[in-house]
Image 1: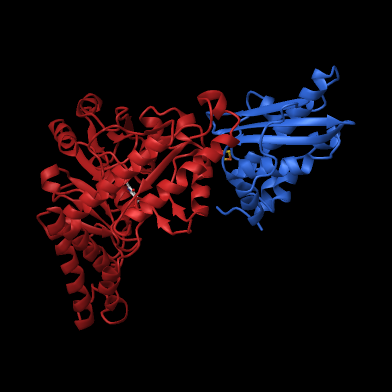
Image 2: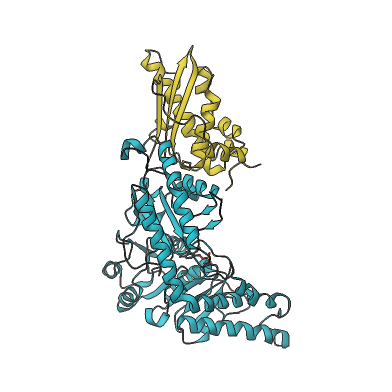
Length: 155
Length: 396
Ligand SMILES: Cc1ncc(COP(=O)(O)O)c(C=O)c1O
Ligand code: FES
């Protein structure tokens, strides 16, 4: 199993690590029993992601995908941010090993939760609810991945 | 701080010792005959093969040359022992006992036998990291054919009370196999002292080549060959022998045994230094298994609140090679079955690190590791959303 250079770069020099003290929305997903937990905090201005930080307990891919998601999401509208897919995350990183595709779900789900948290605490309707994989009690992040997203790593 | 190359994963594999390589080389280009041919070239290769066998036979305390069967490594020896012995002793099914923390080279054949109709007990170790002979006694049945318990665990490094376990198995009429891939050359190993019927060995753990190993099979032990063909290795393992590799294995074994007493003491002190260095400088770290009987070269620790693969990769960036029982690093996505079997909760198993030393490890390598490791742990803990919540501050 090999990580791309870009994965290793984001793992070794993760961007936007931390927690925003005055966060407008916070999303936390994962479970220490599975070995991965991720927390994203966002500042929102004009319905755009103005600032963003993450904390992640997890493997190299979990940390790298968290890091890249914060870069991708910064400046995006809330709608755009919740539409980021694990496949886009993997592509942005130059591919992920198939066994590591699920790690990027942690990052996209964390972001979705943070956006919904912001909306709900501001009395608005959540927009990501229903698309958050970690909300499904049956969701097994470590179940084998067989969708086409894996193909991005086969280069 | 200068980057180093500190290889601290000798339990995974070892480099081939130059002296071993030198002993092997003639058997590729000069003495290259088929040891099963009758003419001079064949006889030369045969002589080398049988001399190597004699050395292994003597080294492990076997009594007869045909008790040592060369294989393509420890995995094959384990497979052959489990499947070969059970299917010959009781082809129509029976009972097999393996410890729950065996290497996959034993567990997978056990599961295969289970699917083929054998009853299999996966015997749980005690939390300290050993199989208790009384627990084995309670697991045995009248139809138990074979018990397989490893001599030294490859992850947590604990040694098993093989002599007592073999005795308990024999009292109930069962045969006993031990996987000695991790112990051969590191602690005294003698098949007669231990009273085992079968044992597996691997060349690349003792500075010999990869892909070579041996199976000890006590004379008279029932055995159906897995690899069938030209009838080499006393009809127990067909295929033209890997003469150079076998010579390498025997040479490597001679060398580790000659150096064993001093080397074991040296490795044990490096190991102690690693465990005390890590547990005293990094808070919330513990040694994984407390059983005092252990391999001199394996340190295994739980670093609470960090994930093993991330640790491994950061150490790699500093030139340090170690391994981890974290799910994330294995590709299997389950944390180490060994740690789970001794009652380690999964969230802690993800943060395990195995540091194993060997012939070319220096005190400087160990000090370098102890220097670079704490800041890595601190950094990962600070990145974790849970650490401060669960353990207070992340600083070490
Ligand atoms: C305990 C144990 N058994 C078996 C093996 C497999 O040996 P090999 O790699 O020679 O197939 C190993 C090492 O990989 C081991 O540590
Ligand atoms: S976080 Fe477990 S494999 Fe990535």
